[in-house]
Image (cartoon, rainbow, N blue to C red; front, side, top):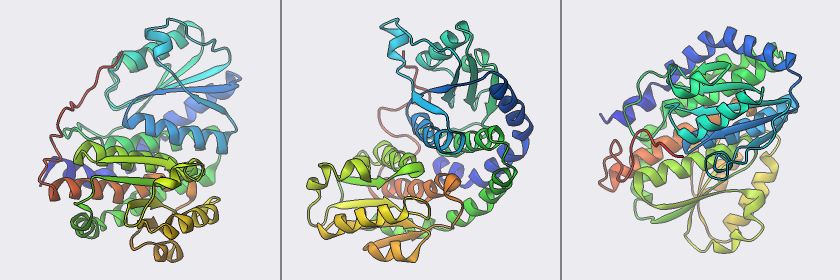
Length: 344
């Protein structure tokens, strides 16, 4: 068994820990946010954690009505011109908590008097030390280079904070659905392995979604690039229809995430146009109608839309892992990558 596969399989247990053990901490953090009269939120992250930040941008905007922006750490480390952060919440997301540029964003925020929250798998990290509150990922050591269990645990921490901030007991209860739904999605491994044989020829592909699951599209593309070295590009379907649609030709591989929610019908309309152009379409969905649109499909369990990215990424992880093996690559040791990347 590869280390990557082992860590994919650990995600249900990790999510159960995050939801149970971090709940009181998230409630205390939410209380501090409400008391601070927060008007906006800035999130600093890189790599896989940046995809978690994209999820947070949609979730905190839609469910908590916060104005959310993604930080540009270069403003801190090279231009030395950080933005003013009055009445801001600043969140740093980093599995290792060691990236200098992410830490710089939170350190400056704290110096300006902003409230800081760190989401990290390393509770004694530099990021944790500059955070007023730390939401730990509780994933245990992640030995594989490509992040899997730390990604979904970051999403769970963000979801927990959002529900606590809204004082929404229903959404807090809905989080309890996640371990079981993720466990069901784990059963897609064999189907993903079979599809990997089909797609092992592909040197390039597209991944499409929108809304909360734009983060899922970005993360699937990243995992496939990291593990298979193929040229994979992710788009919001809204952006994709404004030009990039022209790049799709007969037989071009396209992966789409189209699950139940506010954007479902809109996604179906866009994917219909993609199919008309002859794309070799693989649809990840909880809806039979959407799956029927694809030449191939993977059925995920249905959960409330706001937490669906935590479930929908699982088939993407399996696809990336299986494709790496089908191409003869070692998913535990992707070339040119290290577990901790110290950007400045």
